[in-house]
Amino acid sequence: APPEIKRLALEQKKIKHPVGKRLIEIALKKQSNLIASADVITSAELLKLAEEVGPHIVALKLHMDIIQDFSFELIDALKKIAREKEFLLFEDRKFGDIGNTQELQFKEGIYKIASWADMITSHVIAGEESLKVFENVGVVAIVEMSSKGTLTDDFYITKALNVAENASNVMGAVAQRKISDDLLLFTPGVNISSAGDAKGQQYNTPERVCKNYHTDFIIVGRGIYQSADAAESAKEYQTKGWNAYLESLG
Ligand code: 5IU
Image (cartoon, rainbow, N blue to C red; front, side):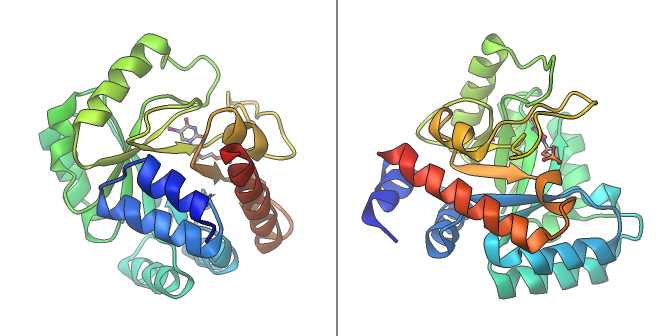
């Protein structure tokens, strides 16, 4: 990998979290800053998508609670693909409760997220101590949302970032703008051929989020899994995202 990328991500960003370091390692190796969001609702669709996009992504973002036929066979199969194709499993659970409840949701219930997820998303609305329950996982804090009318205004973002920066298990944040150099930045709401949907989603291009927001990782859902050829679109987003990332350094 070009040395200037190492400087940006590993040194300049000062990421200490082991999962964050692993993610950067995969990004440099694959030359990809793409995370595919697998918002499909059956195990078969999920596994097919994972196989197809696997070579192009650093992580597969999941909503395990939308899978109609969830099972631990699915988890085992996903873990196998993730190992073979080298990407992390990122459960976009968006926790948002007091620590004790989040801990139960993280470790117990049907999904036992703690037993398989490399990364999870959490709101920070319940404060710093509520995040301590997420052990042995990379926490990505939601400080700003992509949807129209979101309540994450400048005031909220400042306070949310403060919580995120003070929690040692937080490795990154979700936002639609440049944030701290101590956190990896993840940006959803990325699509090349659409400006948004009828349910409030707002899209930007990979170029815009990498160059204007200094995003580290782009998150793409429908742009990939709803396209005619998921592997081909993943490749396109990988190339566009990585080139824009490289250009954003210069
Ligand atoms: N997602 C957003 N916006 C946000 C957050 C999460 O879109 O602010 I936080 C999730 C929702 C979905 C994916 O799983 O990212 C985007 O999917 P599409 O690319 O299909 O819109």
